[in-house]
Length: 273
Image (cartoon, rainbow, N blue to C red; front, side, top):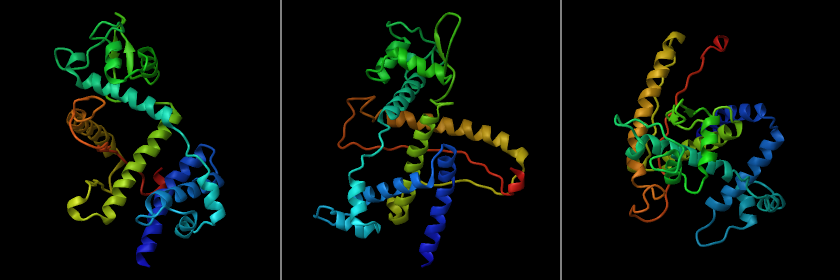
């Protein structure tokens, strides 16, 4: 009973920022309830079947508490499709990562070199071809200019002016990141709830709750610099194993792995917000 109370309090804590985002974007409780029904049915179908038996609507009804009629209705509903946005985000992010990492597109000091748009290597066009597949270079450039990740110099070369692809001002892309990153963090937490110690995934946080407001700007800047450096170091390791970037990488299966770092701050006293 105590675990159930703690679980429900944890769920409420998770739901509060999600409710805030939903309401801010015109969503209602009815929208949330319909999404919750669909995901409960989908998770029960995928993760809670009996060994060696096909999951039935009756079994899903028992697991979720929904009626069989409601389960049947939810099974007929397709999942929302964000694949186009996801591909756009992944391709733009890979182009910037390759630009920062690949010596072929760096200057003598190891920094991302300003690139001509032309088809002659090294150029922006060959960078996109190398790291974004069949995506047109002009479309990638338009996107990176839109989010102010690059700028045109006086000599018409394209210069990288950011450390990562951040879709500033694009609500759809930001909401895509909300779902992806939050889901990955919760997957790790859920795994660690039941995994033995040797199989636990790294999950740590640093937090103090009695800091003066004036201390935050310097720490915010320091943490961003240190975190970016760590991500770039680990990116070098994983990119050598990723088949999209290194088709000759050995191994079996198809796995997703990585590490996420986030900064947080909030006022403990609501009168300070």
